[in-house]
Image (tube, rainbow, N blue to C red; front, side, top):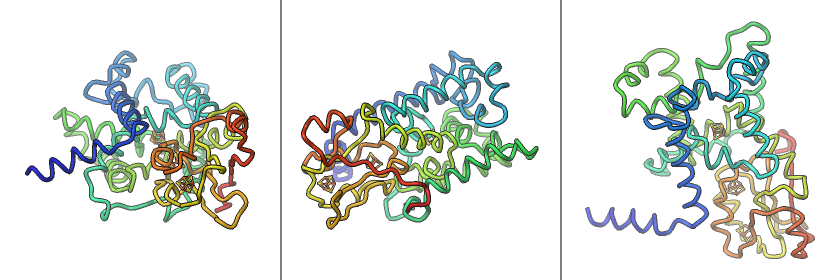
Length: 304
Ligand code: SF4
Ligand code: SF4
Ligand code: SF4
């Protein structure tokens, strides 16, 4: 009994400061936007991010209707995508309770049982395909993917079911059960970083990635960036990056590159780089450090 406890304490002690801050804000996001507390969601009349705060419903042909009926959700959508343009994917990586819940849940599953989806699939291509279906199906009169098959409703409900017998009863039927199995389990806790649904099937994530890639080109926008003068091309960041966003090619002039259509701003690479070459910074600031070699690489989805 003592050994596993010591192991857990050692693991917690080994977590770097950047990641500790991220886990703390993720926990706050869960408290604010998921049951049973959901203090921000409750002030908008709901139990979670699914409801009057939903930012997903406005994506597609119902935008104008949502603008007037679910204004808070539309505002959240603009805040989400807009903040990413300037600061990187903070809301996805540090606040969204949907990604946070499955990421925390996945930590209880041994790594050998987990699946690395970005290594198997071309994640941006898959994600943009899902976004296309999300917009086009209702445009052409077919049933909407939202809300029947939606991680925003299934994952907070799955968590809420632990605390509420009412939610538990609702979770075992029809599309809700399929959604929970797909988003919460298969693409959730069984994904290597607990975020397979983020990488492959989230329309907010798809728009957020576009904003992330576009913003990375702006000299004053903050991103996780690589200082090539300090990089030894050891490859550790590329091996550990859960989204397969980093490419190391010792022979190339720009030996280490980040693809912002893959990067979800988890900042793990920054925590583990042994030379401190990875920094959350702007291109301008890094150039001032006389790093003429700062690299940003924005692939088109089919460039991989
Ligand atoms: S990709 Fe979607 S589910 Fe994942 S953190 Fe972002 S908004 Fe939340
Ligand atoms: S871990 Fe640091 S030094 Fe190693 S390849 Fe990545 S950026 Fe370069
Ligand atoms: S590049 Fe770094 S911040 Fe981006 S997903 Fe990979 S490990 Fe996380």
